[in-house]
Length: 627
Ligand code: ADP
Image (cartoon, rainbow, N blue to C red; front, side):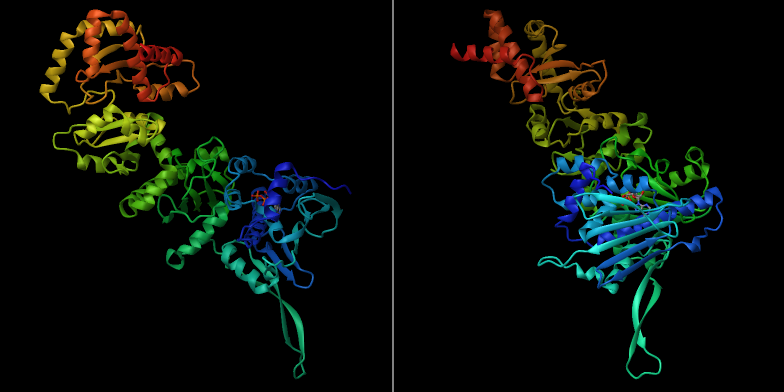
């Protein structure tokens, strides 16, 4: 019987488990119980859907036994069991493929993260055991196999004997060390309380063989030992209990256990409905985005139960994309147990439930925003991007659902605000909502355009995410107010006098402006006298629908067609450079060309763009410096 090696990534997880500094060692039990319960679920579901007789719900159970002397904890289930191949594949390699990458990227983070994010399941046994044996017989098979491992060096599988289908896991508990106490896990009462704490809702009985002693009959003080089997869990799924019965802690434990998180959720939504659609939903909003949330790997969905029996692990049709961060489950008696994935997609009842659930989530988020602003801010940090995508996606059909849930950074408030808060604070004469785009809040604050508008006392929304401007453009208007990009749109903050002045200057210098435009040789659409600038010599703005930010974002997408914003170079006529330009136009047109080039490059740099020919740019500057 050859020793098999764990797949490399499993090995690392194992190392992590064995040497874990992680203090919640106790979770090993809930992980193993939850595996046992899943295995029973699978068999029960198979029995129901394939019409296999002789497997009633009452026949299933999970049994736990401890043996102090032998230092053993034994967890037995009569679920679906595993074949030899399944033992090899399921326990020889860790299922969650993303885990290793995650660990690599976050090498410095504590171990707790990886455990929290993935629920390493079976492997957690090695936190408390120095040897793990898994004896299993698959349902319908005549052969049983024993998988055994002492940890990182590998595992063995051999043929064995087992009467009934199901799995027995035997843990040999580690010896105490100076820092760690393992003996506690051999105490019956400790195991009992762990079952209560984490696995109470498991829908099959979890029985324990309790060692008791009683007086021997006919004796004065002689005692004899006997074993009593007791059911420890209440078996009522948490969501079937009434809200008043449940404490915050119950919800939190349930969430963490079921959805492999180590932080409490920021919001728990427990709701029931009767009538056209009858269901109970228990949903959670996590505090942090899972490491893979903003990748294709992430799968949205709620667990789907039909009268307490799980029929689908991730029913994606129950959640719109913009609420894909919600975790939880829906239990409905209206759904047939045998419904297939394809049928489910067209199921009217399911659509109805999905619609209700969406409304409920929206309402809960609104209430959180109104009553628990700090919590909401935290939530938005984690998932706001998804809401903004939602506003923009599907041609904006969901924009009205989401417009009051999104936040943007405010130049005045120096924090994230809602559109409604912005509108309430608008100046009397202000018609539009102003925004500016850039990489970071700090960079936007330094843009010349920003400073001009801010100096006049107007509030500006700073947009830092790629999707932001698209989201606002999709929304179009908020409470009849239009959105104006302070770098490209005409702003109403300029007085009539200022406008006239600009017009006059433009006319007087039309030849100069035209010359500069020609000098830039197609790079820009126009050179104009700016009404956005106060101190800075130049800035870049745009005409038409595509702004610089949009150009940047759109061109990052993997399409062949590149878009180009119509760029405008704006000159500050109040800046001394303008006099220089005017005089060069009269006296030294070649030099004016050089200056124009430099000014354009400067405008690009200020906007956060790369300049087209940095070598040429520095040469030009250098030659001016040495003259
Ligand atoms: P997870 O449960 O998250 O998939 P685990 O590492 O806990 O990951 O378990 C790996 C796999 O081993 C399970 O998906 C399941 O297929 C199988 N397994 C574990 N425990 C049992 C059990 N008691 N009975 C049957 N199969 C099991």
